[in-house]
Image 1 (cartoon, rainbow, N blue to C red):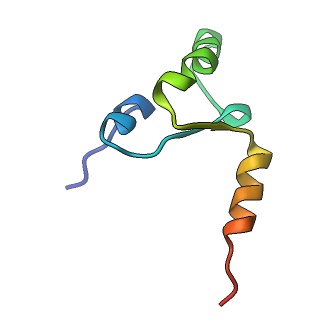
Image 2: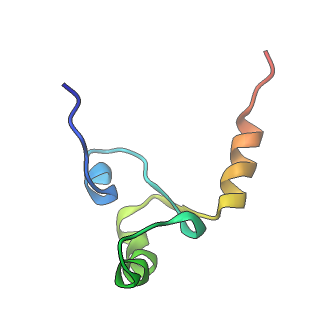
Length: 64
């Protein structure tokens, strides 16, 4: 059975690479949104915008 890892911080503690997409973040409250930004560097490896993620994915596409 697959075990769910509930938060980004937990995923990072289990050695997963965590990227926060700052303009595509959702929370249950405004307080959560305010906390997500400044606390992001404590539990993520990278903080990127949606445009940056799309650019990186486009560069990673390899023709076969």
